[in-house]
Length: 160
Picture 1: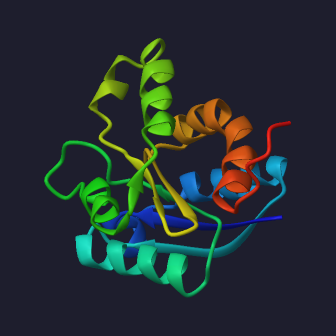
Picture 2 (picture 1 turned 45 degrees about the horizontal axis):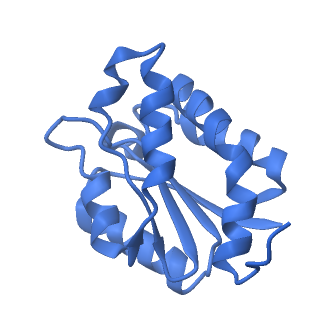
């Protein structure tokens, strides 16, 4: 079982003005890799709130994987990558790079996504876009690599 947290970063979502279909999509899709959602929250686009959640979920709850959704664009309130960068120990750029590259074939605006991926201790943190369609497309791309990444993070480094 992979212990997962989903953090939706959205001013409107946190006020109940928008339904979080992206978070719901993540909950559904992670079942394919044996993922169990341990924590799910919607927070406003506030850098310190996002960072605090990532730290708490990594350090105290010891989640294996945290997906953020939303706040990765160019708008002034889009601060999820900065909040993530503030708390990670190491970058894991391949996830974000392949999502942008593959998505670009069908969605030319995907190059505007600033999402990052990285490790905080033994927790993998991946920023996903906020749109449900983009979340579904991006998870389809990266999901097969996640179980192996989690194994490596937890010290299972022998080759199969």
